[in-house]
Image (cartoon, rainbow, N blue to C red; front, side, top):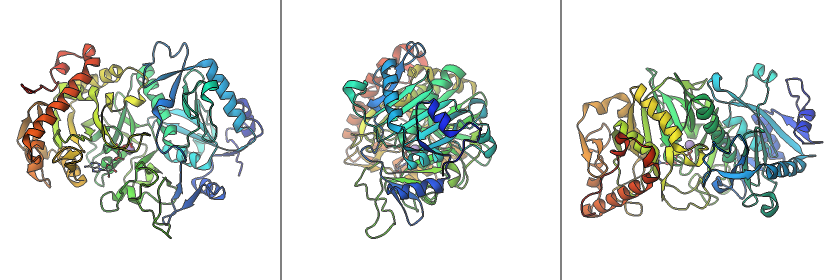
Length: 538
Ligand code: ATP
Ligand code: MN
């Protein structure tokens, strides 16, 4: 199955040029060939819907502490170094790179040519070299698949080398432990080792685009999903992991642009990717029919388990991890928009999974509040996507994606501020988290209610109703919405113990204020005045 590199350069030669010798490369295999390879190697099984199911091994989530950027002239004064972007010595990189390519030499490898960025003005060409066939299927599903013609003239600018079986020796190699994801912006190489978690592949390119687009092209890069209505109105949904980007962007009445990573250029919103990576925990055809239906031949399921004696997936079984996932090409969703580009958004939703149960299910933000909340990026991290998180934990993650920002958060906030001032956009804060009490007492708001609130915001139905203001957070929330019980719209109403609510609200407000201190010097009066106001005596 060793195909030829269609641009005429011989496979082996190209691999040799990057230091991989005597390997047996399989170039641009189809999804079905990659599934066959995986089955042959006993690394996966087919489900009753013919999706390929694999286990990703030791890692079932990203490992943010093991993501590095090589320190050199290009990066030293630009990158926001600290606890998101860890430095990696450039000599150590070269040494580790050599070890990895030696490790891969002589092996059967899977090579894939793909693109990122649906807007051709910003397109990135990426060659992905993987040790394992299913990692390659992930790249096929998540990145943009070139046409035959595009493949024939494919010229790789960036290279991802993915070697889950290679384990670093921290003391020698300069890593923190045996796994690593290292971005070398000068050599245009991303080196991934020791982890088979496929999310490392997509999020390393996201990190890269969060550098290139704002820094070199003046384009805002965003951790958000996007969809478009029948009248061409685009909506984007920012949110941290587990807040609902993928779930809520899959809407039968709207075209899907993308579920996770987008750019906002002068006149367009464009997807960076060519596929989706959806959570599977508790997935049901009733609640999430679009995603459920996408789990078919060609899709890649990760870390799921079957009903005993069958090949039917039990989505409630999270014995391997809460972070069970499926990766599929975007066209597996019926109303996907391809190329995945839309116009300037009319509505922006900030999704937050508030485990405190304090924020309203939906509220409409002023521009100052929008900026304040964007910079704050409040949510509760829910179990799963990151290793070590097992119950909801209060998090402030700037721009709803701090873990992926190579530049200081104010860079992205400035770009968003400019966009909000130049365009008429409604900004909504949606709490997809707890209602009726904090985590442990209350419950997660019903998905059907969140969907109805978003639909009403998009249809303009919320423009016709009265709003009230929530004290402390000064959030303006609607008092009525079709298909949603009015009494849940004010979160305080849903708590039995009102004093407990007030205390929690103050506690959360204090956390907001404390967290914002680090950004206060870069914020204007309008943004600063959007801070929550602590209640007297609190
Ligand atoms: P990631 O960045 O990790 O991909 P995400 O923002 O795309 O995360 P989703 O995959 O959409 O997150 O996950 C949201 C999860 O929460 C889904 O499993 C969904 O079923 C569940 N959920 C439960 N209640 C709600 C709600 N009210 N709104 C949104 N999602 C909900
Ligand atoms: Mn998602």
